[in-house]
Length: 385
Ligand SMILES: Cc1cc2nc3c(=O)[nH]c(=O)nc-3n(C[C@H](O)[C@H](O)[C@H](O)COP(=O)(O)OP(=O)(O)OC[C@H]3O[C@@H](n4cnc5c(N)ncnc54)[C@H](O)[C@@H]3O)c2cc1C
View (spheres, rainbow, N blue to C red):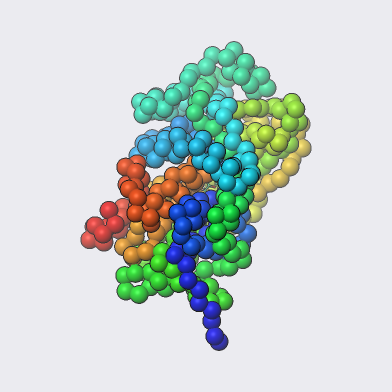
């Protein structure tokens, strides 16, 4: 059968926030770009997320090396939001009330103190709150918390609105977005990528960006050593509906094994399980129970609220929980995947780092540790550092 062949400067595999952001940046710089997605744009992990930009309160032991990248992402967010809203004509629902972390019991308080010490040592801005300061900020939380802190720089964005805005901005700058087109294979010539293959044809490209989230290992044509070590980590979430005029919460709130994220439209997102179940996307009674119970211990009044939606998504998680960004030993092939629980936070830096690397602009220092080189034998990694 005769097959079509088209040609672009760059092809991006996957229209999540990672792929769309990179495509937008490349098109702004005058590149011809196509983004292919096997489904609807933005409906992967980017749709399932909670949208927290929680660089500070998510800083945990053994993850200190992520802090410079996450802090850079956090700082870039306001400018990124302004530019994206202007380019797309869509609001991304950014809220800047900050994040509260609460500890209902003394055990929880000891753990919170341990994490807060680590965060303060790394330069995260965190304020300890008295009980009355906490209830002043959020009067509907369960009274009598053993401890609480406030993180003034950890904000949130509506991740679904973000995906739609990125899609609109990318299209407006000339990106060709193709929903419903699964990329089956990369094509290579020696150590250089030449394009991709779908069921209907070939596309040739000087650069290919693999941004297929948790599915990134499934693309054929990659040498085994370069298959990215990424797997799906399932998360179940629930949203309930508050009265937007009298919301139960205004801040993002973290409690033991849960978080609560109030949206401007009255939705209150409750999350999330962390499960090693492959690509299973069933909502389970145990998952729903765990999320609801943990959130109810923090905000008892939520039991009156109508359930709005329940869904499960797949965090694209690398072997060390950090993203894999930038060049590979195959010339022209770039990775933007493995963002685990931080891909919404990292969307602005992912876009700038990967597009910048393709365009030949200097990569920020904070991005250097995050190439695929860290997973390769030394002889191969020299080429990409
Ligand atoms: C429950 C949950 C809560 C989360 N909460 C947060 C949060 O609060 N803050 C935060 O920063 N992050 C959060 N995350 C993580 C965040 O959602 C991800 O890190 C981020 O969305 C990854 O974006 P992506 O574009 O790389 O991947 P995705 O959004 O998954 O996009 C990948 C795309 O590739 C497409 N694709 C796959 N295979 C192919 C193929 N062969 N051909 C063509 N297209 C293909 C898919 O259809 C998909 O659209 C959460 C994730 C989950 C699941």
